[in-house]
Length: 213
Image (cartoon, rainbow, N blue to C red):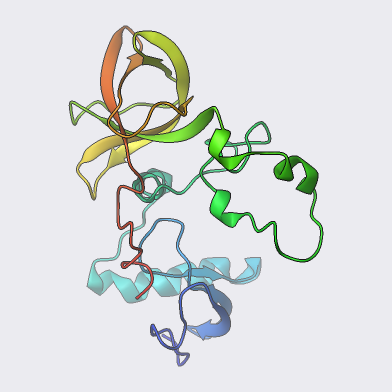
């Protein structure tokens, strides 16, 4: 489908290139928001339908299938990737949200919010976006459910899905930073309480071997 080099060496992780797929001009990013080896392929609107037809047609013999937002959400949660607007927003700081690794205070140049970020002690945050695994292995949450710690309301679920790679339901929730991995919690799901456990993250491929080949 393409004469361009899509190999691990030709297009390394976190790089991009301009290429052609089925004769269609595209921009390809070697990055994946679902935690798996792959690419994001972009083209202009007038080529959208043709690109879909080319990719789907070439992949049918290999068993390719269209996968939608449910699969996308499940995979990103396994990998611990946050969703802006769902898991975090302007009310949260990067250290609470678990993306402090993206802050580079020592880099030259200014950015909006520098003074606010400088005032934060990363080791003294009182709440964190926390990974949960559901104890019964089958109760899939919807999001926005209250989370109880020691029987008392302590936070809420932001995102949830059944993690098919891991074979269990998972969720992310805002909880006090005292809720370390291994801490038991309960989630109020309509008229019943679902037991869950705070887990270390990411649940899948913490060494990034699947995506950085």
